[in-house]
Amino acid sequence: MPTEPTVGTVTVGAHQVRVLRAGAGDAAILLLHGGVPGATPYAACADLWRPLLPALAGEHARVIAPDLPGAGGTVPSDPSALTVAGQADLVAGLAARLGVRRAAVVTHADADLVGLLLARRRGTPVSSLTLVSPTGALPTGDMPENLTLLHPPRPMWSTGSQRWALERLSRRPEHVTPELLALLAEHAAGAAHATALGWQDDFDVAADVRADRIAAANAVYGHARDQGFAVPITLLAGAADPLVDLDRLAVLADILATTPGELDLRVLGDCGHFPFREQPHRAADVIRGSRRWPRSR
Image (cartoon, rainbow, N blue to C red; front, side, top):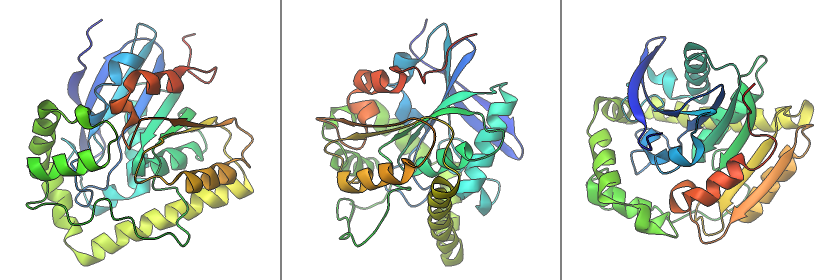
């Protein structure tokens, strides 16, 4: 079984979605990268998952990691594609096009809202949900401003600027390799990122994207309170993640604890914001190490 994923495109509605795939079999795992295109100071994309793919893929499990609209090689069709609902629609459409009826969904950072929105839908393809380093769904409260990524070096999204951001977010920055930086620099110069960046420069569009994420988080809280999530949920974070306050993570666990599905909270030591890159085998063990993992029929 090759360790390098195949890279291709899948037509979903108006989008040509760039997708990384590895493994085979009936069981499916969907990996959804985080980041807000045109706003996050590194070019988030499916390539960030590369160290995790060989640890999860096998003859009984196929792993699918798409570039969400505005990231990597997926050019967004219109500004609504940058919303949480737009991203969830694209993921649901991709799953349908690839014949995935049920999948273990793993999200990173802001994509937690996409996974939670999918999980609350009727007829969802989500069989379980792992939220890695969740940031979008974390309650805000009266927290001091996070200064970790304040004043990135210019020019933004250059190789040096992206290295600065990734290293500041990592406890073990050796995963920030020249190969990764070359990929991210290529994506930052591509049409998908340029399109999203142009829209984010429009004040009204940027405000709508921010408001949409706040509304999505409130919808998640309301669903957890009033109906509960039927699928098992795991929260996974690095103990040294500068963007995920562990006290707020515990509050999110309390909010989701009203759900009838199983809930698990795991914290990996000696990890920052990218546990699936900093310690991929430990992260893979958490993701697949329970009865929630999809099995072949």
